[in-house]
Length: 238
Image (tube, rainbow, N blue to C red; front, side):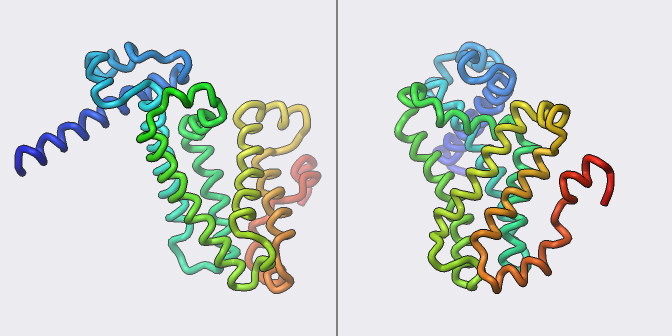
């Protein structure tokens, strides 16, 4: 290995060291409370060294968030790495997103950053571009799957695959926000399982998009995946 390659490897290792430390701080305190001093202390580096690698605290935050995006992308890829019919793959993709939410909650919460526009001014153009590239990679995977469903005559051809993807994502994301904030309220006060209700809501949306051909297949492919009716879950009847 030459000098240049070794220096590049060392720089990458230092970046990872910073993100490893920053993740712990951000997960414990959140972006607004965490400080560069705390990250530097956790990384056992000077604050000045942090600024050699990242232009702002917000850049470091998004660098950590990108790890979450990569995890989600890998889960999506694994969900689609089979020869199952397209409708079943759409179902598997939804399940992969639920798994991501449940197993990587801290990364999921990092996506809230993009709703706080006041913080965006501290993010470098380079980091925003990296985030856009990673988001595009995930969306391309989802769009491609929904487009295939249209091409196979499973989803009505007047439905835009991009719009369909956004509709399904928005529904899932909305439920996950409720689950993240007030899951016990819905279970204890309303008597419903939000995770099961999320699956049911996605099912309703998907059924509204599907052709008659797809609905015939849907009954065969996904009937066993449906949760028990809500009343049956509350009473213990099947």
